[in-house]
Amino acid sequence: VQLSNFIIHKCWENASKIFNLFSHECSRNGLTNRRRGGMIRKTGRGPRSRAAGEGFRLDGGRDDKNITCCFTGHRPEKLPWGTREDAPECLSLKARIAQTLEQLYAKGYRHFISGMAKGADTYFAEAVLDLRRRHPDVRLEAAVPCPTQADRWRAADRARYRALLEQCDLETLVQQHYDRFCMHRRNRYMVERSSALVAVYDGMGGGTLYTISYAMDCGLDVILLEPSPAAM
Image (cartoon, rainbow, N blue to C red; front, side, top):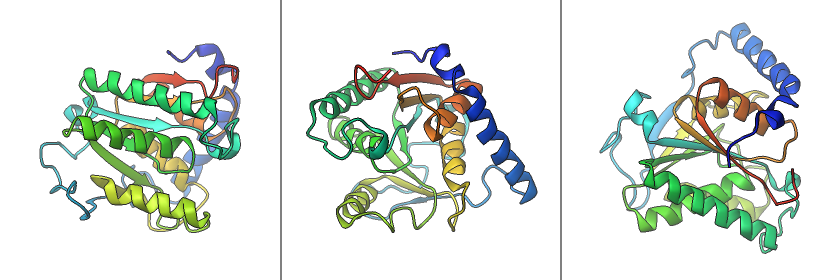
């Protein structure tokens, strides 16, 4: 499903305010280098770990972007079913994410980046792992905004998060400490290294809209998945 300009532009004012505030903060702190604080490393865990660059370019070049897709979406508190992942609407969304990934694979995409938040990010990462079981040349990258991302989550959510990290081919730590803009830096990192974005979006403002707007500005192909049929 292609993203409609109407849905994006009705919340554009809020996204612009976020973008301008973030840009001002970066300039004030001297963060003009988009890779400042960023670190790409192999996970070093499990049979899926690879030497950096094996079979791929990791320099953000055109070839790498052409096979890279990133993801944005809502956390459980903004999803109609919350944490009830056995709800029919949630199962439907997960099936649509899986179908979208297969379609992207058929178009040549091999590298997928998740921001590793609870909710839709987690669904996406788990779907990429399922895709990798069918297609061993798929690679999953975790874009972690800061080391403490999951520290305040429930124990079950932390365990799920760590299990996903263990299975990622690459883990990117965007910065070494938390601040109010680290999530936006994470989102910009993903967009700037991709040529496509899959978004689970309900038509409202927030970080997901910001990421979609930035991806559109960068010329990415944007694929919108509604959280549930009546969400928009």
